[in-house]
Image (cartoon, rainbow, N blue to C red; front, side, top):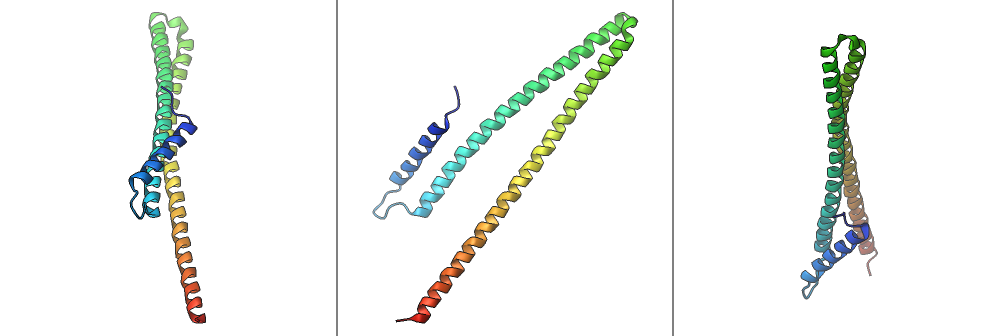
Length: 160
């Protein structure tokens, strides 16, 4: 089964939001804040699902690559180790190939560790960016409230 297309995801979200509006109908209707909260939760869930699928796909590819490279390196080490035990004539070749296979394994482990560190740093950068956005949004709302108060006060001062 393939992932839904962007159009199918959009259609699903529209249907979900329509359900929220229909389910919340009353004589006054669904408040905008309530609708906004429901829409935000549904969209966030959709994005989280997309992120989870992407992460799962990347993890699967990484695991496959690690298994293939690790298996090839271990088979190479085993084969040339056996050749070295059977016949010492290939000692220099075996030593080079064993060393190269060991370096490949070490590089693979190093890359795996570096990837984890890079992912952790990326998460921190994303969190900091969202914190800056939230702070800007808070400041913008405060500024809007201040402007509304000034306009109301100016209108009250002018009076009838």
